[in-house]
Image (tube, rainbow, N blue to C red; front, top):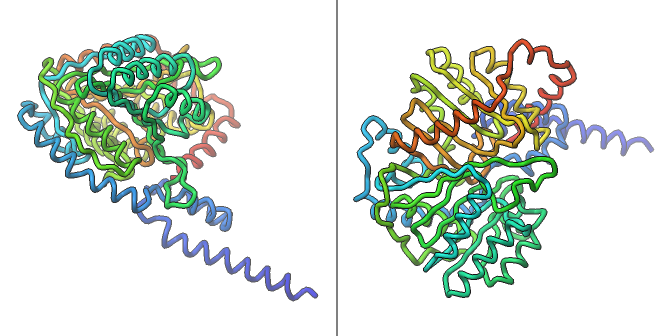
Length: 469
């Protein structure tokens, strides 16, 4: 009577060891050491549940059909780059940075741009609605969150007016980022006659990506001549109860907007399977700013922004300011920041004191002791959730975009960053960053060390969980 249970116990025991041994061969492939360690630890302690979780979220890759659609866009991006060649800037010592960014993201640097930095949340919506109302050809919005709240309705009505004028109006939004408003947003936009699609939608019967691999980009392009890039979504700034967001957005005119238009059309192609039939227009020069678009994501061969950031951190000689709401670095970023301090570089990290994601905050906090001991200055921004994502290095490079300095943005999400090379644009970014610093509270190492032991344990557990990528 006991033979069957005994056999099942033996089979289960053997299965667990097969999973453990197999994990040693499979898990370390194409993963960071931290991620490999976390997965192996989970699978060795809980082989069957660990295997199920690994199969669900263990491979940060798109299905073959999606990768093929992306590859089919590369000639389109290359053709856009060739048409931008007449606007190539003289970047001097920054030329290698632009060359690497072009290799990583397929978009060239351009001169002749005008960049207006807007850190007024409502001001961004005001300008966007005004630009949509003045549009003559097209309105293309690519965004992580599009809500059907008062802000979303205001933008939707402006786009509806554009539809009534006969313009091409398209919206791509992420269904996970917008999950609270998804159905209402679809109904609201379709009621206005807007062509709306979801990015990375759930597909039950077709090869699909992990549900936590998202399109986190925020790009708004009007007539192919005005572009918005940054951190702000189409949603009320206080959509989380008790939390008010502070953002940073670049409103851009000039040749670099052609790269924005090409990327938005490319993402539309990936979701619809229709290849772009219209080359993005090349806007006339509008200013003196030197700018470059750097898209990144799982379809690109390297972690684009991280690759660039780590290199520039190692090359920094004077000052580094990084502002990000979510900071979960890998060994490369962490080591580069510590090495910069050792060379005498002043490294300032600005993170939000306001917490909107408890697990992320705990994981992020687990790095503070190491950073503080190395000499990195950690500044906690109070009152608002500082959702802006920006960094500047030595007054020679500034970046504004959608990417956090964390494993998710570097390895899982589709992101986009605007790189700025001219001194005036960089100075404006640094002025905004200095305002962040002036309004922040400096974290003290000795005081931080005295935090309760249960808090330290929770941080370490959260750090382990966030390494499972």
